[in-house]
Length: 130
Image (cartoon, rainbow, N blue to C red; front, side, top):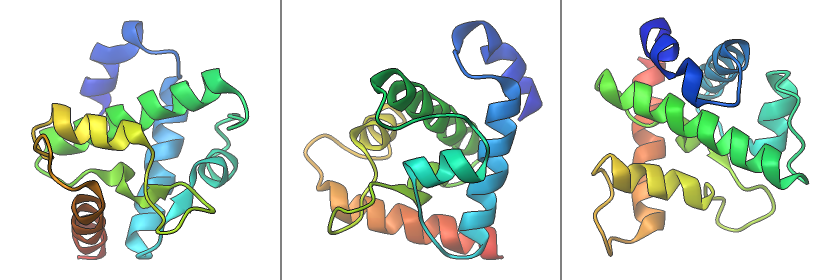
C-alpha cells in the first residue's frame, strides 16, 4: 500500500496519515462484519471531515476510491463497500462507490447497483474475517 500511496501523493488532497487511518478503520469494520457511515468513519479514524461540507464529501470519496483501487490491485474486494449512507433504507454507499466499481470493470453498465453492493459487501466481510 505504501508504494501505491507514494505514487499518488501529488494527485490527492488527503494526507498519507488520513489514508492509513481510514484503511485501518475500514479493516476493523470489515473484520467485525459491520458497516459504517461516512461521518462516523471520519470521527472514528480522526480524519477531520464534515459531511455537511461538499469539499469534505468529495475528499473522503476520493480517499475511499483510492483505497478500493489499491485493494482491487492486490486482488481483494472493494474495502470501501463497508461505508454506507446512514438513514437510507436499504443502507448503500454513495454514488462514488458505484463509479469506482464501474471504472474497475466490476460493475457493468446497466447492472443493478444494490445487488452488486450486497455481493461486494459480503465479499469484503468474508475476505477480512478469514
